[in-house]
Length: 382
Image 1 (tube, rainbow, N blue to C red):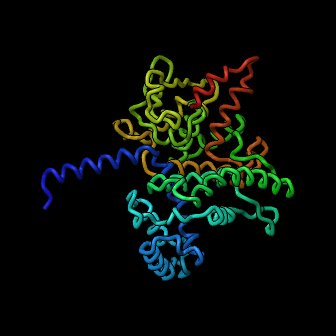
Image 2: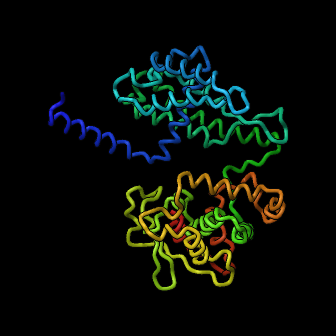
Image 3: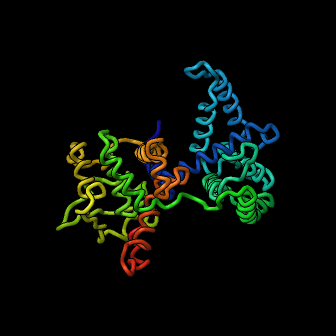
């Protein structure tokens, strides 16, 4: 039986582990895990690379694969989600003990540049207008996979310069990413596709139309989605901040609603804006884009929020929820043509379009002879 001193030491070790884990944001860590799970499954699906998987973890993956093969959907067809296999991979990645090789799912010390780039070569998609043609995914997909692998090296405690194989891997990857950027552009040029990356800015006219559709809807979830849209546009904030904002961080002063920004992507400690809340003002010319009215309708619809000590948008997975609602409207038969006519192709719309649209609007289309200084815009959109 452990003594009091030993238990105390174990608690301190657990606290240290929790502190170390916080160096990476939970959303970022989740992204790394999903990409490393994909890499593990690719190694598992290719027999010649089974030697790269830790033997006992490989055995667990085989058992999980058998369970998945015997899992049927509601339509009595075999499930393709590979739920059990992914669960085993995630558990292996989250249970690593740095320095203990048997807990590290992938034998990183023998992973070569050739093998990893063969995995990256699978990052392709079918062209919508030509089913027989495939193009490479966006450069961000390759960057994300490489960042996830780098994170795995860090978490495992294995140096990127532990041997010649790992040195070559990390030396050549930067050149590979540069090459895939250029090749991706060439592929799109040859097929007559746009070379633009990421989501397009939401034009102000399309923003007003989308806000009006949500404002006039009788659905309660559209009230919350309307508030989300209006707040993200006016704060020029990342969608993650908006859905995670707390009601206790919002208050009124004079004719403005004030938002305590707290921690952001560029300020993980939440100290840069501690004395500078973001001000949002009413729009008394257009009701459906008025932030004060949007917030008031939201609080009337969900009055329990006023009790405090809770998020402004209650529930889990709110980012995906509102993203789905907005995309559903933009892509619907009822609104698609109008949204396209206003300059927002549905396939290029995402929650980030709102933020980009707000920045574009205030920097180029405010109707004044001079827009706000770029420094002020950048500070607002940090």
